[in-house]
Image (cartoon, rainbow, N blue to C red; front, side, top):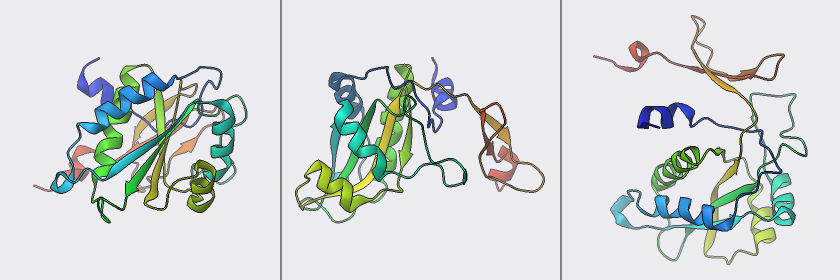
Length: 190
């Protein structure tokens, strides 16, 4: 798969084959990709908590909110939930600012996941206090993001933003997920 194919297939997947198992070694490989990402001041303040065990995944799931634009959808049903999670953390003993390090690292993680036939979704709507307690995180580690990972079972289609300018993603009656993207002419200003 060339880089453009990786980028096009790197969508926000929210429904997975929950029976597909992702082992810890795969998660460690993905963190190794994050490790090589650029970091502001080369501070490298990010740490990662890895979860691939069903009982822990079941505790993590209710701390997350899914797809704000899909008001009538509470999130993936049992059987469609992620097989693994990567919780992105800021180590406050290293720095109090992570700049945009999380985005760069998560893009590396997700592109690596796509290359392995997996998919994921970055989630920032998190009950951080509850999740910190579940994970028994030390006070120096603050939760920034959660990446939900698994074998996608949904189709995600990119469409052009229409004349009304609406960028809200949506599902059709067949469960196909559509994500409107602005055209190049709308992005390039000169």
